[in-house]
Image 1 (cartoon, one colour):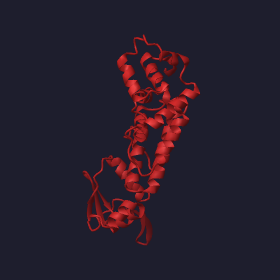
Image 2 (cartoon, one colour):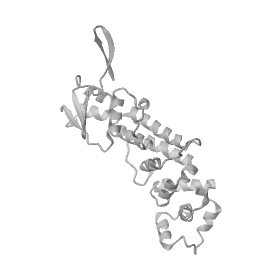
Image 3 (tube, rainbow, N blue to C red):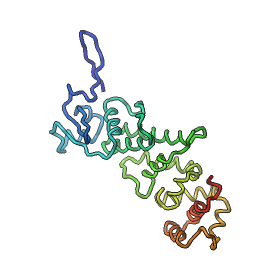
Length: 263
């Protein structure tokens, strides 16, 4: 957010972000501190509004400390958004390698501090980034870190979010493009061990793959080849423990036998 000041009769914009001169509260995150303004933070965040105007211990403090697991870059992105530099318009920091994971991190901050506009923009950038990796002209395709970021939303140990919009959005995207994700080795490996999607979604995903015919006949035949050297009793126990669903068993069999459909 910028204020208008006049110097020698000439108006100019003053950026209030991290402005010590007009600050009335200091926000500390680990070894970083921000000269902030209670009115601006409270205007954009329900959490900060309650903190400053409610019965939070921060209400009458000039210095507050946020105990955050998120990266400093993500936290600074959130504060810049509160000061008017919308997240959608912010450039991605050049040192960020896991772009999709970074968008998830920002969304989680928006969820924690109840900043609806930040959540909307972070969700849009998350979905757009995943779609970009899925395009036919994408040089590298779907990246491994992207699969792990999706697992944080859809997996059996998914993060707990009050706003489920991003979870719903990526769930729909994964189901709509089930074959593309199924061909990704990391996705398939995690799915086969029950660590990619929660049980209900995993069954829905594999049922869709099965209906689409993405599982070739060879994979179904493998299920009944009891003498297969690559399918030990230990493997059978693990798969059955996860699910007795035929497609899941076929999935694990194909993974172990190097079925060419995944190449």
